[in-house]
Length: 307
Length: 307
Image (cartoon, rainbow over all chains, first blue to last red):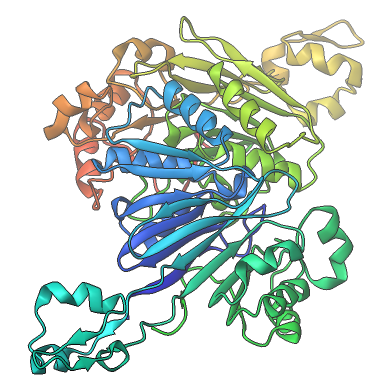
């Protein structure tokens, strides 16, 4: 099975505390590395957990609160100083480019590698990445400033031809793609081997949804329905649900409710307020509304679906 | 003796490596805390070494390479979120204000405390801070982009009146300031107690010079002559002196030479390139030209002069 996993680099909200770093994650899909958000110190965390800067070709920034992007200029500069040559694609709010460019200008840094910028918007979800295996779509979140999440979705894969039959019936290689798409196979004597015999179903496409920062927002449920893994912010415990609403954040209980409504298979909660040292109450609260809840913790890796 | 000491928060140049952080320091003068440079992760280091954010009322930024200021927006935001009310004074290149303001604007952050900005220039040294005890003057450095160091100098203090004599001769309190300034004291019988008998010399003013980043620059020697403590960058070992010159940096041997020329009492070298894991060769090289050399290391505190 193709590798599809998420590593947490930071689990803290706003101010770093209790050895928790601001938000950043790495999605590894088949050794292709995507970074989601890039809080201050993200490059230290990449060092710590053994991710090479230059393996990352895509960085997606959810919004322009500092705890989600302040590590970006440092990382981009370190990629430059480490001799990167391959293109880096950056997606985020349009103003992010202005923030980067002004800092590159005043430091007189002329990047040695191409930087491609994809501005995101918050009118409707849009696909910001697609290759033959996977696509990434934005999720419109509801925060104090424009903010998007990111939905990583494996594309539907072709049916798998049973290898033994290829040899047994001497199927020529040029016919394989058609059979993968559903064609039957006609033997020399004119008899037909139905596709359902020759092939098996492909694995179910897996998906990962990243939702931070946002007030509890049921509008996202349809889009993320059935995700194998959901990361949802849970800045506060539910006794502070009014404060969560006022600041456009979610409580741990609400994160579990969203996971339940969306029929997610597994939930990671994160973006914890500095006011909480012990996170077990968050976990218990989230588990009270969605049993398969887990805490985001620095350096932890979560598989997306069955591996 | 009034406390006067420097704590290293980061000793790394350009890219963080080997558990070394980008440049940042805290100068503690009599429980007044000044921050010099504020590389990425400076707020994590403040947490780690127990400095409260809100005790820092002055931040001085040498130049606009990311490894010297990228922690600033995060720290300023955390001060805001932690309820700071007292004014923060920030000094640095004029463009720094633009970099800050654009980021505060897009994150829709309206600081809860007054931020006073002092633009620095590189035409001539200027005093950017003075109170009754100490002043801070810029040092014009020679780097790829405009860059200043900072010279912390105790002001000459008044003479100290010998306490026993105050009582013995019944000297009234309102006369003390004049005696401290050098006045003699006339007894009731008209006889004169000379100031030299009544008072002792004040302690010698102490000073700390921070010089990073710069090519080896003998022009600074006169200004920093006799400093008790000199921090000087030593990005490279001397076998790479051509690379040091090309990038407007200094070698460890050259840092020692500057300390010797300036008749400094003690030298700290720092701003080490990521290419060096082991720093003992830097120390040995610097000691070969200035014996009292020391390595900047995260969390180490150096006294300025005799304490």
